[in-house]
Length: 94
Image 1 (cartoon, one colour):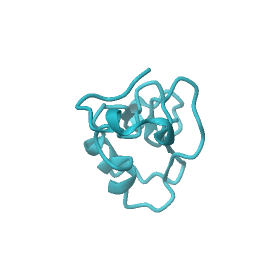
Image 2 (cartoon, rainbow, N blue to C red):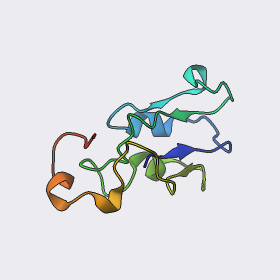
Image 3 (cartoon, one colour):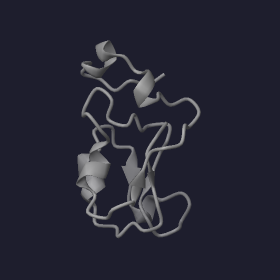
Image 4 (cartoon, helix red, strand yellow):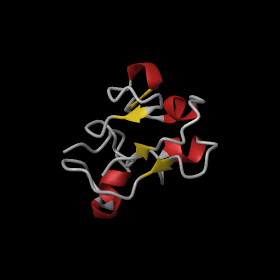
């Protein structure tokens, strides 16, 4: 699973600064060219091993802008990652 930035993004930049694995790009680098920020699902680890919840969502001032409720292929799901990997100093990527 990975976080997703919805179309209510105000492009404030708070999420980019908080992402520990640099999975978020601004609207200039969004491959969908839809004017909002974008999360690369092949990089996003939902901050497992870094924070208790996705740091981008915590930093975002816009309620409902950042969501993470859908499973994305090849991404670890927070509920399936054990305590041993949560205390790791590197992102969990399969």
